[in-house]
Each structure stands twice: as C-alpha cells, then as structure tokens.
Length: 80
Image 1 (cartoon, rainbow, N blue to C red):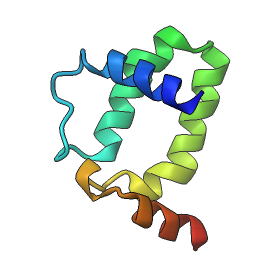
Image 2 (tube, one colour):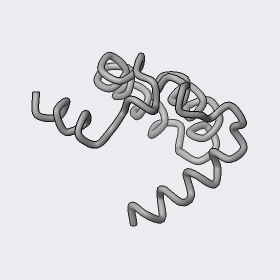
Image 3 (cartoon, rainbow, N blue to C red):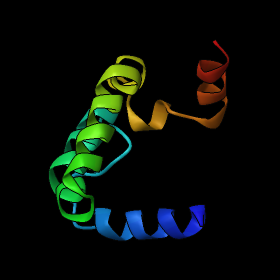
C-alpha cells in the first residue's frame, strides 16, 4: 500500500518541474497543498492535513532541504 501511494505521488510530482533535492521541505509541502490536496482530497481532509502539517511538521522539517531529510534523521526526530 505504501509503495503504491509513493508511486502515485511521484507520478503526480512529475508535473512539478522545480522538484529537486535543494528545495526546502516547506516548498514541497506548499506545492502539495496547493496542487495535489485541493484536487485529490476532500476539503475537510485537506484542511486537517494542512493544520497538522503547520502545527507539528513544519516547525521541525519545514526549513530543511530535501537532501538533508534522511531516515536516520527522521528516526532521531521521532525519538525526541
């Protein structure tokens, strides 16, 4: 199931020409909420996801570049 979601998400991201490792996570999230969530999710779901992102994820990962986000780093963040 996770692999299928990743495949579908990558397929949709191909339309985003600016996607690269040097972009910040917040830039990708902004694109996601503007271009993907508004089309693919129910409005209430998109609203909830964005609220959770703004409150919990953006303060921790928002300013990080995509290349800086690794599995070990995410594991450390989750353990703190």
